[in-house]
Image 1 (tube, rainbow, N blue to C red):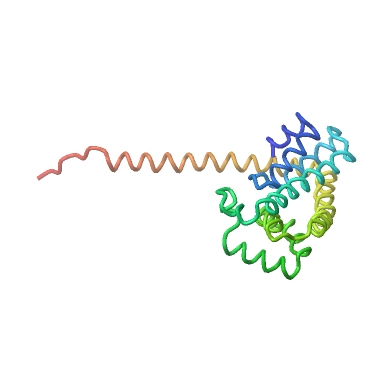
Image 2 (cartoon, rainbow, N blue to C red; image 1 turned 180 degrees about the vertical axis):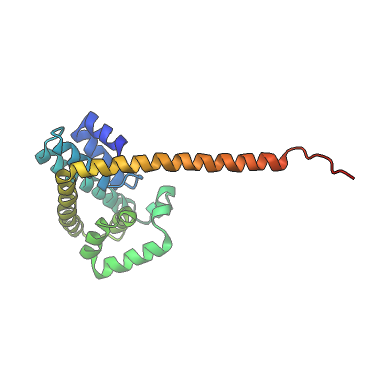
Length: 202
C-alpha cells in the first residue's frame, strides 16, 4: 500500500492509471489497492476526486481491453506463451469457453469481480471471439459499479483505513520479530546438537 501511495503521490493520475493497468494485465497488483489509494489521496486533497475516479475506471478498462485484443489477435497461440500458461490452465479454459457459449456478458461481468480469474477470463473472451461490444458493455457496466463503490468507501473512511494499515504494519513488525526469535532458537538448538560431543565416561 505504501509503495502504491508513493507512486500515486509522485505521478498522481499517471500513477493511478499505471498501477491499474499493470494490475489488470495480470501483474501481482490487486486492482483494489490503487483505487483505495486514489480515494484516500482524494480525501486528503492530494488529488481531485472527479479526475481520480474516471482515471481509475479508464485504467482498469484499458488493461481489460488489451487482454481481450491479445486473445482475439493471436487466438489459440496465446495459450502457448509461458506467462499465459499459468493463467489459462486446461480446466479453467474449458470452464470459461463453456460459459462464454452460454452466457457471454454474464461471464465477463462476473469475472471482473474475481481477481484470480479476471486476466484469464478476458484473454479467453478474445480467444473465444466474444463480440467486442458485448465484452466492453459487460465489463464497463461491472466496473462502473464496483470501482466507484471501492473509491467511495476509501474516500469517506480514509482515516479508518489509515488506522487499520498502521495496526497491520505494527502486527507485521511483531510477527517478523517473533519469526526471527523462532529462527534463532532453531539455530541454537541445531548448533548445540551438532557440536563436538564429550567422550562418555567408562
